[in-house]
Image (cartoon, rainbow, N blue to C red):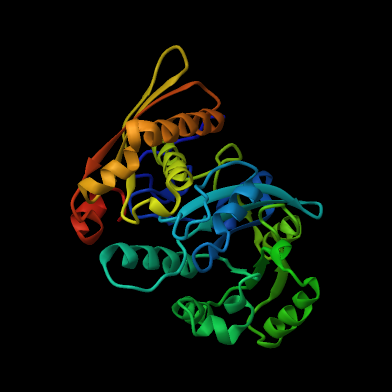
Length: 344
């Protein structure tokens, strides 16, 4: 599978309807779209939630491919990423453009502020808002507890949101007492803040088909926002970096420095059909560099081997991946460094 790329500077009225320079999506008036190109349900859905509730796992499940980095470590997702799902709702075609966002987390510093703005900005620009909670987590089982958590600013934004809001109660498979689900559902329903409640397990797929139908069914008819063969607005470089970063989470676990980033410095598609990738892993201190490399280079080798396999599987071609580590002192606290590393 290959990705359709749009050049920077595409503007309203061009064919494909996305302005890469400022990040806005344009929806043409129905009168400007040939009747043969109009489908029953088209719209955007922002996926919101606290860190580690399974938002990226859910997006990967709905899309049927490994688009986003996932791990058990909070804040795996850092950027706002679009994932496009084409499906059927009843007898009508639908296109759902999901926007995966970083987990809502308060705190100081430009890096955390960037991730908060990514999440809240996505909600305001979407047709449907999808709030995902970890129903197995005691502090996410009722609205009062959520209001007292780092989700407060997100809930305030959803209160002002004029479109439908759907609550996905994820990780139902982890509930020790299955009978506890009904009172949790009842409690959220009584708040009158959600148009629909859907219990799901993003990991197993339970309830996710129903969730997709509920979301798409709330869209109006229109022209596709993206061509059918396009699955994301992100370039291949970004996707490759995500899969390398996922392996950092998996291989280093709790030892992974919070301020670590992956930058693709070379991405070369050769005539024989394979891809050569060179990626830099940025950390903030020399001691962190040693952690990433590991004794005798074992850790970075494992990251490279598994990252190469994941990228090759996603792109459908052989991949050659070279990794190295750079020390970029306090990059997470510097606006220019954040911008240079793609967080802007």
